[in-house]
Length: 324
Image (cartoon, rainbow, N blue to C red; front, side):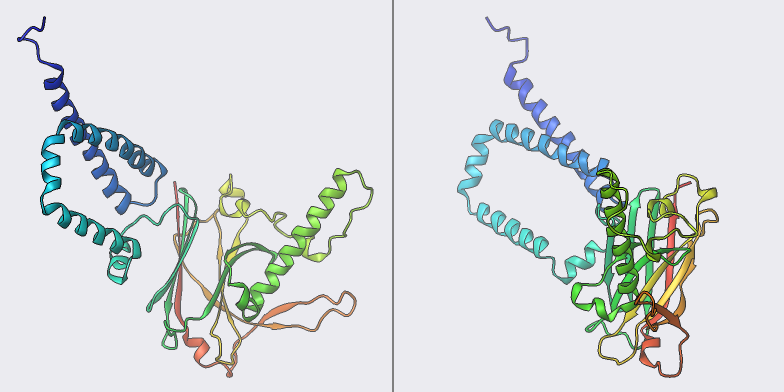
């Protein structure tokens, strides 16, 4: 027999579900705000997503507890207004027109992507976050001849002290690679060295006395002795790390002027947060080596033939945030 002095299951169930709904909603609200204003964090996003599933469960229980009032609400005209507003906001946030994109730019959360590149009217911004301990940003302020409606072609990559390509951060699309010849030359050398190294590795695995392909100068030993980007970007010991360079090649299609290459040296043993890139010159193909028929490109000083190409970029600032 039920003791009237003891609370019933329903009396306990309703407040428990209501309080559980409120507390989970509080966690969702806080983590949602944090995820918007702070850089991407798998912990925050994971907590927000998993708590969302819990919230779905408790809201379902809350709906069951309040089935009669909800049924009355569904019979009213207000339900159509709620559906219309929700549908409109969903489509608006999904399509992300310019005003919504402007709001999203206020967010500090760039997502989990390692690389992100954005072009605007006043600047081009490239972000590279290979680790929470290393956040690189290249901010390029545009010059007088820059046209946002017809932006220039851009490539960004890293080289070791020997001048050998070690990683492309921002490649051009396949159709425009020939208009950024210095990057194309460096990247082709890296691809060739990678292929030949794989051939040698395969030959050694099958026990061949001679490698399938001989490695030429592209893949020969460099002053750094490493082609692994991690050895430069995230070295285990910064005191013994080797400097490397970040290069930016820019070319405006149709201006009848060569591309221009800007560069800066990065040294993890002497870390600097802010560095300006310097204009290194324009690329030009040299006469091929008669013995090896090997294609080579070099950078040459700017001359009087350059006009609008010099005004594409006002300045380029490299920012690197490293954890202590």
